[in-house]
Image 1 (cartoon, one colour):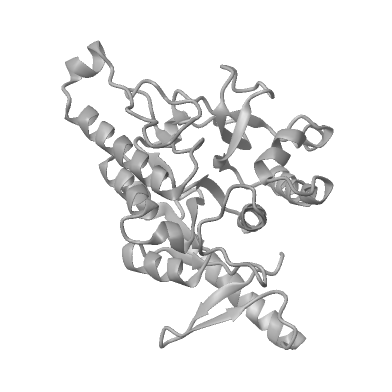
Image 2 (cartoon, one colour; image 1 turned 180 degrees about the horizontal axis):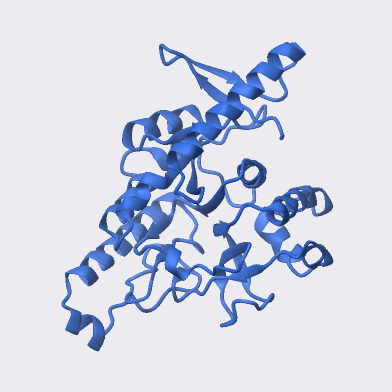
Length: 319
């Protein structure tokens, strides 16, 4: 297993950074630290896991963790969604900086602190495709590989995705790796679907572990590209078929976003504020989504069936 840096929390809530690039730590100390880090991660995952070792994961930085920001809206969606409140018991939050970790402990509790690579700061909002953004996306991919190695299935969700219905009945039972789409062609097996890396359900097995290892290493083959664009390139390559990975693409009817909205609120499970630039724009349209959902749930069954309500977004976001 790879060596991950974490923020170690002492008995007096003092925080000490340990990273894989520390030069002044002896081999014995590094081994001891890595063992402790692995235990901490496993404990968080074990606490959040369902009976079949499935966890729900999201990553969080300071910009999105602030009171009234995206994290609060994310949690609110679980609380007002249909059969989603109980899923919060299975949510583990991966904090990318100290402030996000502390905030997570206050409002949620199941939190793991993952240190950024040396010299990288993940706390501010990262501009799309800048160097910090790319490092954050690839760090996330590497971390999810570790989760699979520990034997946990996971639903990974970006924090700017609202959970309105329990998604598990809509997942495919025969898929190793299933992922949401920016554009869905209508066929879950069509390799020409446009995947979105912000939402996926991955089962832990030898095939997915090998796939994540290959996916992460492909960043060197395609420098300067994010993990989603690299996935688009390797999804149809020979490696996927060689290892026998069963990949499925999730319909935007159930797993929508601003790129391609889920038009029928009678069907929607999740909605993603993708195709949107700017933190304030995201927050504004997420609030509109939550209001739309409240209006929907307050409507009678007859109204829902006769004239299905739809979204009033994008509003601040522009496609």
